[in-house]
Each structure stands twice: as structure tokens, then as C-alpha cells.
Length: 331
Image 1 (cartoon, one colour):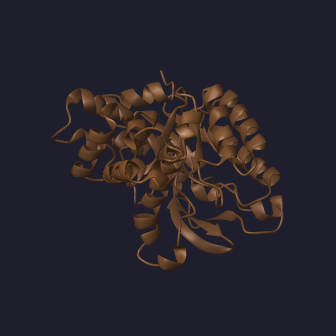
Image 2 (spheres, rainbow, N blue to C red; image 1 turned 90 degrees about the vertical axis):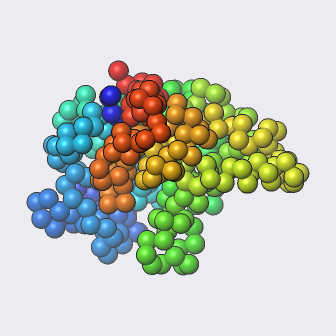
């Protein structure tokens, strides 16, 4: 079975001086720890340790071979989005990140593919950069699930998604800048609680606002981390839509009827959760994703799907690679 990992991250080691390049303010950075170890920095402080798979394509290929992953589609670590910066600075930063991603892919363009990032706070610049990046060789675009207080139902973000549909750019929505950090300072609760909630929020923002009614069906849209908590809570949402007119005010159809408008990845880490995801979305709308190379990702890449007791071989093949090949137009 061909295996395509649609959710993996990279972090360039050439961005040590973004603050001096783009002006004063808080920027992510990088600090070498050793030949194979690095540290993401933010506002001059250590933020997260990483290792060379984030920037070294040869190391990445080694680990792909170890776990029988044929293709990896890389996207930037979300701390690099720069959505709070002036649009021109974020656009230049996005171009730097995107060009670096393609340089990594040139190491083995059959095995490594890249998604671009865009300055989503400026819709005109975002449309311009995604068009440039797709022509340059990117296979999709990764966006955050919100820009400041604007959810995906914002008219500007809807315009961007319409543009992606028009140029054939698949979209991965990744949670970032999680809610209520003051209430979740410990135990990685922002990743364990807020991140699934952010993804649920972005899905419901499109459904309940009527966003999917304004978007063409040709838009290819995928939500990371198994769509967050949406599968478990969709029954609750349907019930609210049936019982309360304020829920269905802008949503003409039962919320669960829109589940054929988007894909999710398989990064849910348990057989029971993947069972539910397949029952809700259908195996044809789940794509293999690991969140590699971070420790909260699937370390034994592919084991959950390959060893799942309730999936048929055809379902496993669809999830591991067939769906992604069609979604990202990979031969």
C-alpha cells in the first residue's frame, strides 16, 4: 500500500535573524544546539527543542524509510505564520519559508512535497503568494484556523478559500494560537484541550455560517488532527440545529450533511477514535497524517492504520495513500 503522510512539519534553520530582516517586534527564530539538535526561539526565549529532521531532508528520508512512508507532504510549523505582522512583512516571510521548503524537496522531489504558507491577514497578498507558490511547485497551502478574532466564516477568508478553489490549491487547516492560554499554562493543556476545540470551532464556523453554501464543491479542504473534537460532538450539533432556531439561522441544512465537504487526517492515536472518524466521515475522506517530527505526533508512523483490526484492506489503502494521491494530485 502506498503511504503518503499529509501532515508533517518542517522548521528552517536559516531564520535566525527575522527581527533584523523585517523590523522590530517578536519573531520566531532558531538556535543551534548541536549538529543534530536545535531550539525554536520566540521573543529571544527558548520555545521548543527540535531535531534535524525539521530542516535536514536526508534525515527525514531516513526516518520515512524506517517506517515505510513513501511520500511526505511538509508544511511549516505554525509559529512561522506571522499573521500578527504587517502584511508586507508576513508576505516576504512566507516567500522565504516557501522557497526554503522547495529547496528541501529538491533533495528527493518524488518523496518530499511541500505546502506553502501565506500572509492570511492580507487577502490580496495571500492570494498572490498562494498562486506564486503553486506555480513554483507547492502542492497545497496550509493556513491557520483563524486570524486574530476572525474565524473561517470571515468574508475575507471565504474569498481566499474561493481563490484556492479557482486555482486548484488544496487547503490544510491547522490549529494555532490556541484559546484561553491563561487557563491552560501547564501540562501542555493548550495542545490537549484547546487545539481540538480550535479545530472544531473552525469546522462549525464554516458549517453554521452557511460558509459551505458560498464555497464551490471543487474546493479541497482538510482539517488536521482528525478534525479535532468534531466527530464526537456532531450529534450534539445536529440536535442543537433541530431544536434551536438560533443555531440553524444561517445554516440551511443539517450540520452533519456537510461532512462530505471536507477531509480530515488520521492523527487520532487510538483505534476507537479512528473507528468513529471513519464512521462519521467515511474512509474515503480520511487521509494518513502523523504530525511528524514532533513528539505529540504518531511516532510509529502508520502503525495505527496498518494494524487496525476493523478496517478492510481497501479502507487502509484509501487512508494510507489513495485519498491523498487524489486530493493533492500526486502521481
